[in-house]
Image 1 (tube, rainbow, N blue to C red):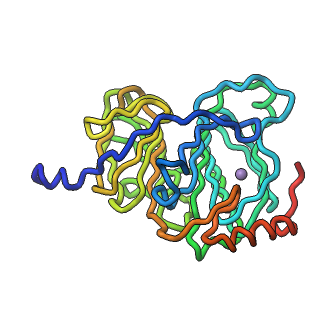
Image 2 (cartoon, rainbow, N blue to C red):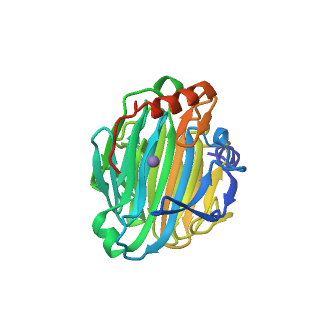
Image 3 (cartoon, rainbow, N blue to C red):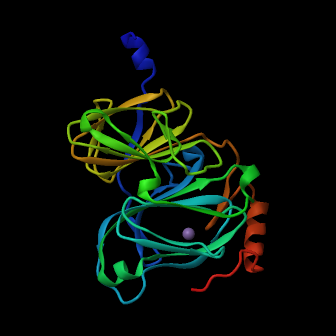
Length: 298
Ligand code: MN
């Protein structure tokens, strides 16, 4: 391949974003809301709608259970990725689970569900280091009213690619990397990886040109395409201009890589509902008020 051809295929950096000021979600999640925002609009980030990042934070021991009580969702999926600490989930469909370091829960709210998200009881009592991401994946219009579904993905169930020479590994939460797939079911094409790379090592990442592609540095800083430095806890959005980028770990690195095909459909969102039209939002509120999302004790 000639130099020119290589350059044509480079996925370049559109912007690097500092973690925005934190806000609390309930009393258990201290998050940087990376998007939607004025710079990262819902349209630009499609098929993803929201990303909240609880950067490393030590929660003190607590008698009160920290988290968020019962609340509804409709029209999208919540994907919760734990890096430190433990999170418990319960929903109105009777699904319950605890995820710890390296685990993921993938809840399809679809036509409507109530859930609650708390620190796991023992972790809550003892306190400790907590770090997690919650990503909202929008659903295509035709799937918005799909039956709610819950997928628990323990770390051992994920796809895994060991990089050559022990340089690191890639855990595949959704989609595929170098031919290795993950069992997580998605409604539109999505790749979601945890990439772990040792200090000083590089890896080439190849993702479709037209996919919305971004990365969060969960641990350590990185250098992209030899030029763009991304510090720890920063977010990087790529241009839709090529397939490949080179990632170098400036420290022992853990990055969350997200890549998905844009839905190219109108978005109408209000609080916990992400639909296509204002009428559908009104319907969601009415259905919730009429108890159609089921019941869940606080
Ligand atoms: Mn929720």
